[in-house]
Amino acid sequence: MILKFFNKEDKSNNDSDLINVACLMIHAAKIDENYTDKEKTIIKNTLTKLNDNNENIDQLILEAEKKESDSNHIQDFTKNIKAMNKDNKVEIIKNIWSIILSDGNSDIFEENLMRRLAGLLYVDSKTMGDIKLSIQNKFKQ
Image 1 (cartoon, rainbow, N blue to C red):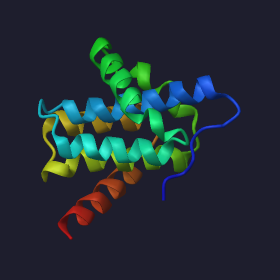
Image 2: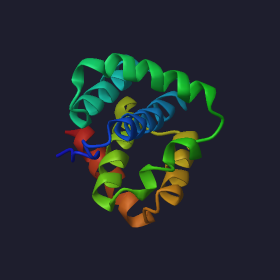
Image 3: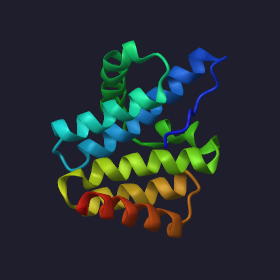
Image 4: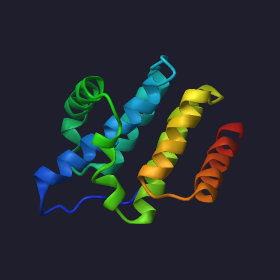
């Protein structure tokens, strides 16, 4: 189940947080230099679940793609996310693993990204491993 991450009373902050989540997912999708339609679909479906204002999803993705391509490090995207509660961070990480494993494997760059995200978001290695295994098992079914 996707949790509602954002406080509805502060819309400008909500959009910023949602764009940062989208940037992380797009970064994960592009890191293997193969940004597929399947990955784009996962990103769009995830953002649709997270956002109450679904009519702007395509625009939000375009903004996130531009922000991601203009950025040279992922810390820009993780600042606000690391302040979220653990359940929200786990949901974000599950979706990023889904993107990475959507092609059936993960390469060294994707694995490195997830290790960096674990540190930046303060998520322990066991939790990261458990999430990865659960997503791998989901794709095997």
